[in-house]
Length: 398
Image (cartoon, rainbow, N blue to C red; front, side):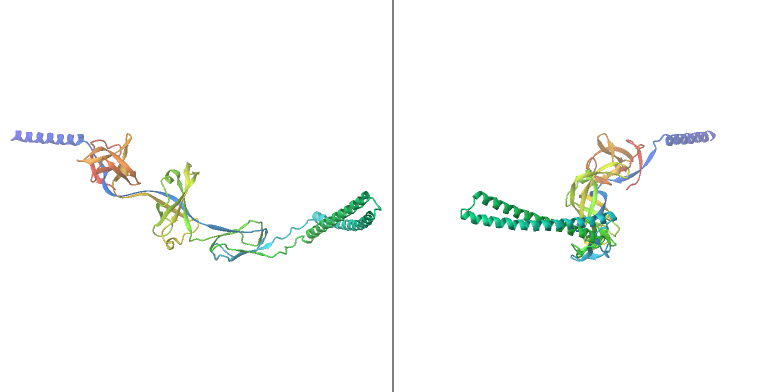
């Protein structure tokens, strides 16, 4: 009996040691998230930040220099086409300093002297012309009677013509002197005085609302000065500065969604234009990026986005491709294997490396073209602890 007990004891101890050794030497089990390869809809898209802008904006400017009266309209006020939005009075003349005022008086005196001189030359030229014309008439009569020569007749005719030219020149000098006198007197008379012209009324070119008011109080403005900016907020579009590598995949008519625009729900939009020119923009990380402007129109009813205004921030999700039934695998199950892609499948509780051919990729899933079938289990986010044949304890993946 004693021998039997010893045998049983040592046999049990040996079994326990063997069990402990087996547990110690056994290959460890790795816990891993597992997901299923399945068929379903797949959408390719990318997200960019954009802003709204008016399709058309109109500037009300001063056609001439003058004094604009106070503008009572404020940004947001509605205006009708043809409505008077501003009044522009003729410009006020500048004040003359003492030197300029003395110069103006001297110009008046000079012009008056020139005018008197012109009057005297006119009188002298008129007298000379009258004498020359009488002499010519006398010589002409004598020539008809043969009592004078042709040379003498031609000489009197030339003197009459010269006298006529002198009179014409004197009268032209008189007009010039009169104009100079008027200018000189006007310079002195308008010293700091307001213009006497009629005030101009400026009207709204279209129906809309006031977007900006460049001038508020009454102030002198030069010709071309912008006074108001007017537009129709119901005619909004979206401007997105997209990466050029993304822009080449877009085309007019492509659908998009407007997200996180400040209101409820998602708005629909359509790409209308991709500008052909690109530009360099520095990202938040300081990286130079080539971008181009993409313009979209809202396709949702205007009542849904009526709260949006000009220059509001939005986020636009461009829908590049939509498939209803595609075999797909989670994109975070993929890893590089040489020049291709692979996944770790799970079969019999162990990991197996499986080459896979993929097509289109979205942010969450990739299209499977070969190497996998629906229902297979794959490891999500495999790390370097997982190798071919590693024992896997699966947990539910995304």
